[in-house]
Length: 635
View (cartoon, rainbow, N blue to C red):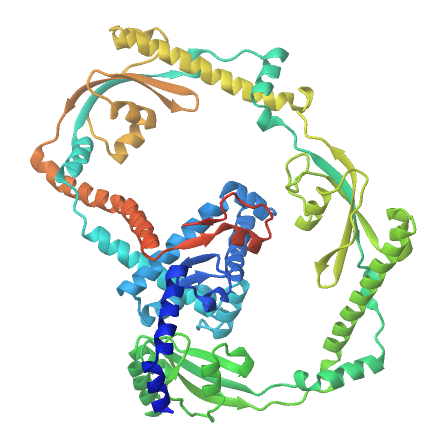
């Protein structure tokens, strides 16, 4: 066989085959077509060895949307979110971020497991409120509620450490020119003299009672703020019925369900144990040796600066880490495990009690089974009502008649805006899917039944549509009058202050100017730009006095209904020897502030180095947003 291959390699056929391969590469241009790569699932974001699938991107965005809805206390759609922050901007930022972390890992910025473990154990939400111990169960449940996995949290913490360490190292090496600190030190240490007086609203004059023409003009100028949004009222149909909670369940069904679920209802074996988590295997081995020597977990934890975690009568299913669960349920009473490689660090466990599992009787599980069967029957009843409702509607019956016929319930929805607020701006408890359905219907129309999950359905009819419109003057007269009066008072105060300041700039003595409006002149010398001085003088005086040159006139708001008008006197520079220390402090502070744009530049450079790309069209598909941008992909 080998000799046959050797003979073929020397023949003219082998040479011809090589020529054909070369011609093929020449024709295709050596494009390195990757057939296997084309079979890989699509990625919304790719950066080096990191990527974000459509499912992962949707999960991240769901968490972001949920946070926004919590902050704003209203339903927010992806369309609204993308109207504020374009998809391209979101993906570009995410791609640059992932590229930076990929580059950091590649260059050797790799936070150790000890740091990750320490950070995880600093979160109060992961500790049992009764025992005060770290709870694996709470850890898993809290992450589940946040739509995260332990691996996702660990990666997030590791990325935060990478960013912090890189930024700290970069800023620590920065040295700005000394003149930067000297300029700021000069401003804070120099002393200034000044004279000023306060012009009150009473001195400047107050607005008279407005006429209707003035109020109507004011309303036109502020139409966007006063316009009442479109309001819709309707009727909500729900197919659940209170009688469903009391559906009779036969003994035969209860027995059959018990027989079916007997194994799953049985009480599992439970164990009482203590775990100690260590960052390294060597530390875990020392802990195991100390426990085997008879030391208590508390003493061992105190000696190693660790907090033991105590678990009482815990089933295997409640232990989130499979490796730890296998170790605990492989031990006898008072036995100590060898170090176990857990998701985070190493764990040593000591079992102190074993509670054998037992079979659950029908009487033990009766209430649970009855509730389960009753819920199942209720969902079935709802489904039958929905089906009967649709049949009634197809038969030409009106919505109200169909509701009465099938035994559903109708609830009136008062006039509400698209955001779920009534005429007074109060937030009503109208579910977001109902609002969304209402704004897809015309007046008098109802939608088809819509599922809400868990067997629930609803139908909504729009009874009345009130178009967006400006309110009448009489309906908002008091509010508009107050707003017009406040605006007019500000105008009068500002105009009078400007006129008085112009007199000062023309060379008139400040005492005479102040006397013309009945104000008193304040004279101060040797003032420094310090927090106590600003608090004593007021922000208006401080802004005017410390933001100009000698001889300059200033006019600044002192309060909601007063202005300060004054003139800067002599400016005395600080003694150089006394300003040196402060100059150095300012230089250090400015160095930290200037690190932000440098960090942003580093992240952008990492994105280019790691060939970061993103696909806007795929991102929109993942979110279920149909709009397609002109440029679906970016670099």
